[in-house]
Image (cartoon, rainbow, N blue to C red; front, side):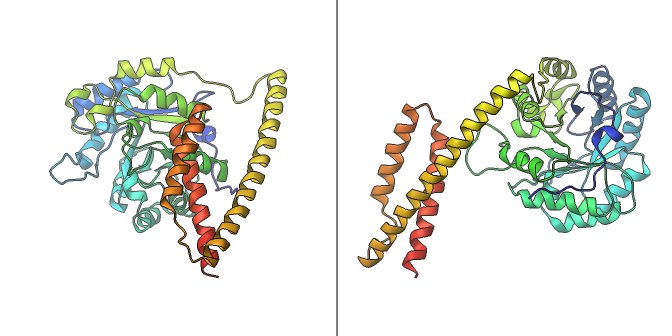
Length: 361
């Protein structure tokens, strides 16, 4: 069900023109020279609106670089003075929020490891009560839309109306080419549920390396995400955190210049053809639902037959045959193997559920 949070539209408090919002800067503020050198180069890139740098870094192990802390505020102030860029940094505690407010940080963001814990989010929101500052909220590490939405709601309910969601990918058990697989269906569903919420994508944390950044950035814009947060470092090879995923400013400029900003709507002829094709899809979807309903009716008959004959629900040989046969058939018709596996698994889970209910009647 759709719902509107009480949000001030992005273009009312941040002037990006007709272009996507672009946030860039190093993963971590390491030294004054590193921060200022990176910021000065980034400020020359058309389309970059905000400079990002982490002062506190939530690391997996305590022997890793955990940020410079409050010492970095002086460097970020110089960035603002010398480049005119707005400044954002991550906060994970009420003390971080208080320090940022005292040091004129323009925008705050709450990271994935914090969003996963509603207690931590609530503590931060209480420190934001009565404060007028933009807040960006990354998705939790685990693929839990309700947890992400809950964090956004908590922050909105204490009066933060300049609100942005950041899609940075999700942890997955299966091996992936991504550091954090994008699972696009989750931010798309968030956009559907809260249509007035700006959502930007963080390709750096999704990819975990420089090689795929353009592909994910373009995909994000094609899916009507409102902008990008991309990590950039003056010398990524010596970065103290996430070195593999940070771009040189000159490479960031090349990436942004290659992005194609596509229109959400087209000519009348285009719209007419699109409506025709969508109508075809509507008919096919209705046919699919009818076919699935018929399949589940047969599953019910099978369940009753198994119960009468005291046969187990799960038949591994039959399931193995279905997987192999349907996947081969689907691949022959040009369908993706992973998609077929997911589809068949969903159908099988529902079939087992129906038969289990029948067995327990």
